[in-house]
Image 1 (cartoon, one colour):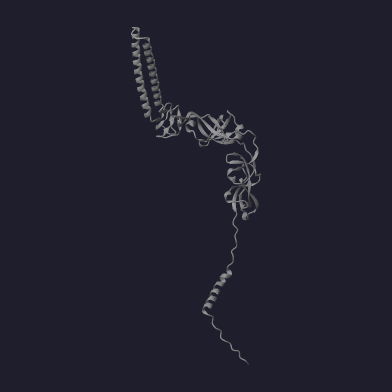
Image 2: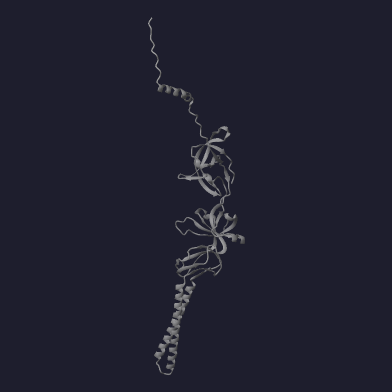
Amino acid sequence: MSCISRQPSLPLPRHRRWRWVFLLAWLPWLSGCEAPPVEEEPLRPVRTLLVEESVMQVQREIPGRLEAMANRRVSFRVAGRLDALHVVTGDLVSPGQRLASLDAADLVLQRDRAAAALAAAEAGAANAESEWQRARRLYEAGSVAARELDAARAQVEAARSQRRSAGDALALAQRQLDFAQLESPGACRVAQRLAESGENLAAGQPLLVLACGEGLEVRASLSEDMLDRLAPGDEVTVRLPLHALELTGRVREIGVPVDSRQATWPLRVSLEGLGEAELASLRPGMAAELSLPRQRAAEAAIWVPMLAVQRDARGTFVFVAEPTAEVPNGNGREAVIRRVDVTLGERHGDTLQVSQGLVAGMALVIAGMSRIQEGQRVRLQDVPRENSP
């Protein structure tokens, strides 16, 4: 029998034993690591409105501005440096009340010089009168020739003319001095100051704008498509939002554009039926709205909230949601967002008429438009029916 010798097994090196220990320790953890399930991102909820056709009695509304019936731009009739302004914007002024004053030092000197020239002319005229009287007596006595009498008479006439001219110059200088004071032409309210103390003003340069008279009117601008709706004398409805007033106005004047680049026609509407309390509370410059009558019969149309309409480089558009399936757990319906280009018509309050692009039955997105885009999947939160305007 042969003997097979077995060599003893050598122990593992220490660094290899530690490697197996760590591997066995981490084996349970490695076997339990699995990729977590991917959760779908929840659908973004959006609010929608069911589009329907409705009939609205539309009146065209245009913005306006409350103004006084007569706005006067007052100015000095002479040039000079503005010495003082005696009123501020909003002051009520009475007829003849002083509004402003010019530095009148130069005008006073001119007046005094004219007065001195008048005194000299009067003295010269008196002397010429005395010489003519003496020459006439000598002529009657035969001591002087007729030629000398005629010369004395000519000197008297010249002196009298100089005296009259000097008197006129003094009156003109006094008028110029009086023009250095600016007075109110009537019972008005100071609407605007166009210069300040110390500025040099030219003759006729506007200094103040006065709103005169008790009457008020609304001034607005008409576009070309509205010209056939109004004529002088027509009644319109005037709303003053600040005071929650609705008044009756009458078209006073429809002007013509004065600038070739201007595409609107100036409109002036006088207000009727204003009481004392309303006149006391209303001020020129307040906002107003004019409602123009609609000439054609009202027709069914699609009206949408203004906040649902958007505009970009491609034009005006809205977002609509097209339902695709029910969302689990009864949380509404899943839908896909689609962009729809629209053509707008008239405006009424905070709603706009859509003449092209939408049809009845579409779900119009009215909230969350800034966070969605075309093709995005969303969840319809609610689909209320559109109320008739």
